Length: 93
Image 1 (cartoon, rainbow, N blue to C red):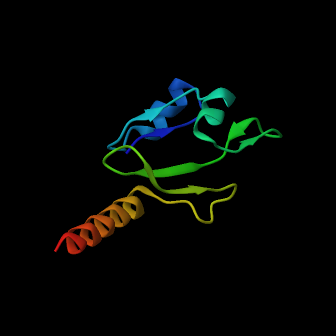
Image 2: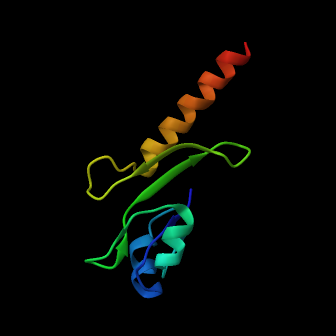
């Protein structure tokens, strides 16, 4: 799991100090465009864009949100990944 924000390095380090995954800081409009995220012009920041990738790097699932509703937290992402792995194992027999 990784995360990114438009925030400064200082603010990001403060917010991320208790997380166990890396958080990139200083994301730009170009970064958002690269991942297909929605950029909010009025507040000049990237809206949450979440991706679950398969082993080969393909996007298995994604969410885009401009409000807190519908955003995945790290625990939900891990639950989803565990579920997908269980389904894959069952399909293999």
